[in-house]
Image (cartoon, rainbow, N blue to C red):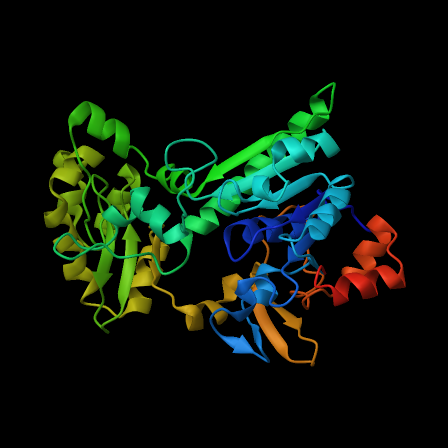
Length: 400
């Protein structure tokens, strides 16, 4: 029996480019939504030309745009804007990440769309949100990570701040866009008038929301959390330790009972039985002493032996993986987080699996990232009853 995907029947018009909005669109598409990606007619989404290429297309593209349909529309052309307005009549969500005011300039702002389809949900991702004194400033994920407080915390105290090695600001904003859109869909379902709404996601706010207790700690205790390298302030022990073979291991022994098991496993029953270290507060106050004790032990054994001893003691422990280690890891494979797809030329490609795992209605990879305008004919015929002459004229005029 074929199971219905949880978002089957939801139609999403993706107007965004590069990372944040397309990442959200990818998740919708994985769980059954029909995602129609609108691209500029000549070059398409800039992501098509980012990073490592294979046959003139970004390899990343095949993941970021999987399961989507690609159509081409010149949004700066009045005729292109009319096409979007016609499509809006038949979709549930418009997803975009342009600079605030851009859609309004094109006659595609919230009020314009609601006049066409009162049930429409407009999910907007921008650097600083749709309101406030910074709303018109251009904003990239890298800047959001800085102004959102994350860069300040990343790295070692004696060195300048560094970035996380991925576009974390864009990606977390994409996740919030998915969450907010699903909430709006649920609210529309429950509402008597079935009215849509605006979902306003700001990159800097998405980053700021991850900062744990940093704001109230500053407010009540006057503490400014600083960069601390491999440690997490106030949580002990939780750090990276060197092994005898030169590899490094991450150990999380900050739970009270876990700490006792850890100390016994490394032969430090004296520390395990000392009431001074029975709670996190006491351990945090003596973190260097505890970390030194742990690393004195890890340096006696190679990484695999350290893992085995601590696994047997039920202490959270793990190596620091690069992509080579991830690809060969048995757990990644068992959880289907390493999936193999086939490109148009028969080339096999490994791609990340789907998160989260749903037991009854799981997500699915049905197709790789589409060619530019691959679904023009299908979408325009289905949604707008375009004729051959319509296609020919609009293509020659650069509208599609």
